[in-house]
Amino acid sequence: MNILMITGSAHKKGTSSYLADAFAKGAKEAGHAVCRFDAAYKNVHPCIGCDSCQKNGQICVFKDDMQELNPELLKAEVVVFVSPIYYYDINAQIKAVIDRFYANNSLLKGADKKAVLMLTYADETEEAAEGAVASYKGMLKYLEWENVGIVSAKACYVLEDVVNSEYPKQAYKLGKSL
Ligand SMILES: Cc1cc2nc3c(=O)[nH]c(=O)nc-3n(C[C@H](O)[C@H](O)[C@H](O)COP(=O)(O)O)c2cc1C
Image 1: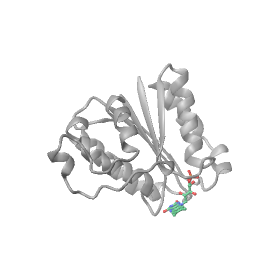
Image 2: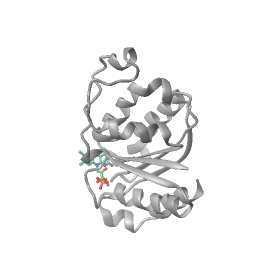
Image 3: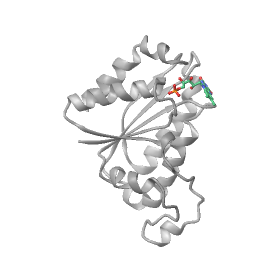
Image 4: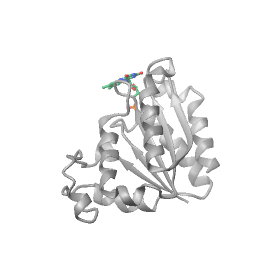
């Protein structure tokens, strides 16, 4: 399967990147192709809702790194969203990418895709991730994609927290199980 992983964090050696690596390891071992798009290191302009894409055959007014992502997004059978929690939600870098899905809405909605969500955050209760999980589930319901797993890594403020937790194993197993 073609797996597209979209990450949000700017921390290359951070908690969410560690989970992304574990997931990718499992998925590659299972024979899948994994394409990773690190949104924090890409040029992705926020959607301005001009609707030009809806009138001009999915062509966005912004010529940026979404041009690199879009073919991968369209061909992916599984899309993996990986983000740290910032103020009770996914971070802005990954949200900007998701909002730009709008240009390809008609192709993405109802497409036969599965999705995974992986979150890391400092709080010791899962309440901190409720907003992000609700947005993800709402988005999937709208797009008619199937959720195949959520890794919600609480009490993971810095790298060593996640390294010493059960979450990398969860992410690895999830990648391998696809
Ligand atoms: C701007 C900002 C906002 C944050 N907001 C939250 C929050 O609302 N809840 C929480 O538990 N942790 C919060 N954190 C902590 C991060 O989620 C946590 O450190 C996470 O492991 C960072 O992931 P990364 O290493 O992949 O970047 C915040 C961190 C930053 C920098």
